[in-house]
Image (cartoon, rainbow over all chains, first blue to last red; front, top):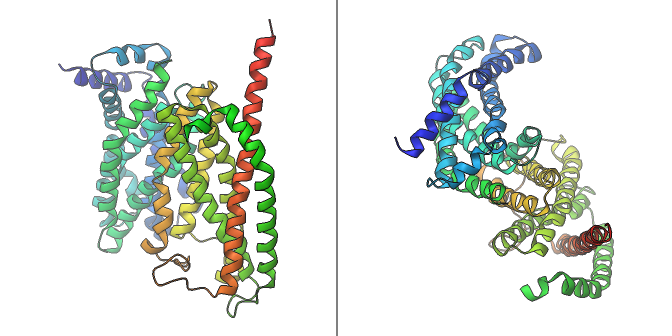
Length: 221
Length: 237
């Protein structure tokens, strides 16, 4: 097994076993989505309109929730230094960790989203766009989040500052993601999903390099 | 250029320039403010057009400050130069201030003109994100204890955030919702009468010099602070 696959398998195992928190992110996603109708009222037409956007926000928050442990545990017990010394380039290590993070948060979230959309009375035309946009967009959230997680590595309560760092960078994902769902519901030409795909590809490709640069400054000293 | 980046040379040079820079800032701002009030009321906007003279330059300087911060970050990251790190660090709170000023004056103008303090228009939203970028940058600097590590991490963040600058610049063309498009720097010359153009340019020059005056004061303070800290460390047994 290649070093990349081994690292990916290790992180997947860590995330899915006890204390890994992959299921907690899913529960958090459902809890945020369930809380919204209490806040804005349960009028079905309103919920159908805002459902896509609410699920998108809940998904981004849930993905962010799991981010502060992405490198933190390895950093604290010294495994990150060992990983940095391994022949695998730091960029590949960052990419493997991003992939593991997405596979345990973004992917299950996207699969669960139609069930929650049911609670929001999402019109049938919106379902495909919702799942597709989440599948396309959440890798970007994992990628940009990984950059922020690497930057805040040496901070003790890094989880508090992380949302502030990623909020401006993630705005396009939420705008285009939720926009894609609305466009599908209204039966409009769906340009948003292409822009989302472009943004996602760009961030997934560039993020490992930025993340590796940020990791390097935290491991070299 | 890097010859002047030596902190000692910088202190000498900036000390000599600072007073002149401050004086030029004061003259430009005074002249700009005088012309702002001397200009006739606009035929559509009435007296609220005067808000433009404090709003537009603030927005320009806010974006310029981010560009400056990103450039200093790049130099700090590539050349490992402490003075560039200090310049980037000290530009951030000023940039955040100008961003907030642009947002506040803009919404004060928007209330009588658009009938609302805020809309989620492309330009306004991307400018709000600029404020969050600044705040995140400042927060990251403050959160990391090691000075060099904080400088590098913040520099990476600043460079990632540069993507927002073109979005702000072109937002009025891409979304064209409520915020008006370019009327000054455009092909075919400005769309604004010169009685309004002059105070605008004077204020813009004044704001820019104000930014650099305050930046130099902040950088000098930071250098002296670091020097004092180093002295205190050496003095303690």
